[in-house]
Image 1 (cartoon, helix red, strand yellow):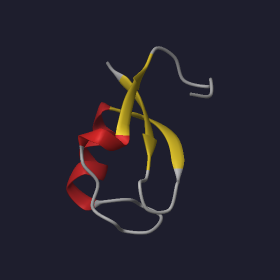
Image 2: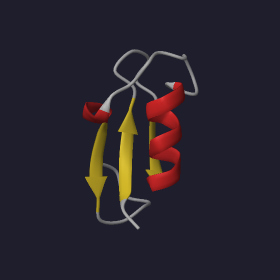
Image 3: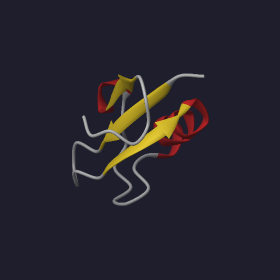
Image 4: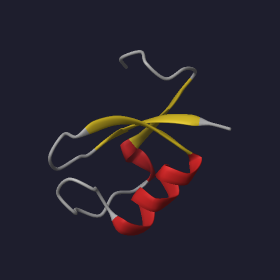
Length: 52
């Protein structure tokens, strides 16, 4: 299972997510501000709990 860092391009929300959460964010937009997000808002991470 891949892990990603999500950073909202609008409000700057930054959180580690898994594949399922990534798919939900891509379809529904940022959970904080609601702006639509694309794949560029995600960077692949090797581990959760470390800052990017």
